[in-house]
Length: 391
Image (cartoon, rainbow, N blue to C red; front, side, top):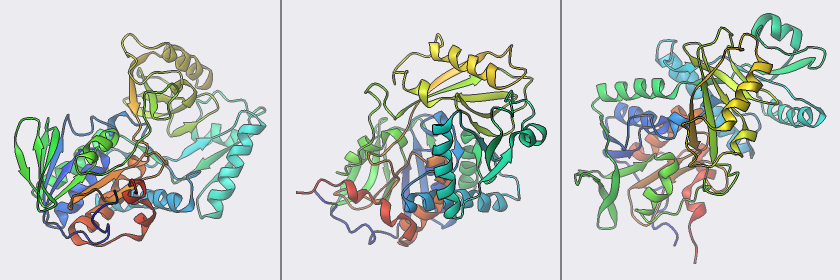
């Protein structure tokens, strides 16, 4: 059944419950509070402990298609700069350090060249640098032979985020404006009257009134949206080698210095604070089941560590201190979902695989739509109605 509400005619709303305190939910809470909206954020765990806390958290847009999705991600990166300026020049948890990438063989470089050519044609910054210069000026601890890898691609506008740090900052600012943040508050139902959502019901039995509910639940979006009669299918984590499953590994503190996101033929890595690195590999992702135990460490941890030691100097004594499985909130067609949804009025859903890249932007846009009824052209191609079951 198609949604009963035209997606662009909802709002404005003066009392909003946000379900989920991840990057998008926290950003939306701040922007709604700044608009004078009464906001309550319900998080089933601790803020940032769900999908956002199990993300590689790399801000980027190159290689994302179609053009409208690229532009949405590019605008997301620009939103970080605006938020950084709003924070006085230093945004807690945001690290705009850039990103380095190179290929292992002709096929790998062909894919990179295709991506770079397209992105640069769309106004994206990507610079080819001699590897000798990278080793001298950017990443001296890389154990890469310039004779085998003569150049790398540097994306200066990309970076990474420490989601719990930034989410905490966003929520504190929202709370200072009157927003309420409830941890351990799992939403199990929606209250409705006259065909509209009028609040949520918590597992504790409590009811919270609202004239709009915003779903920012990441991997749990489909089940919460179903409460409003909305169909938002996500890629399931259960099949073998599911694209929804990601393995993240945290190293012990290292003597090696890695200053930015690195995409290498064997391993992706980035700084993780206190001298640690966060490791990731799409190849290793495909070898891990979504419900695999992380204690003791899975065998893929030893493989990632071996790759790290080949890639970065001063890592012979490195250990893996922790491993976690992240379930990516990947809509069935791969693209962001944002808009009014379902058979009940007053229910707004937001979910994206690129939620870290676009968190501050989506917070701006959805706050404008929910609080002010201002439809965003950037979201026009990403409405939930595209998944509606049509008779």
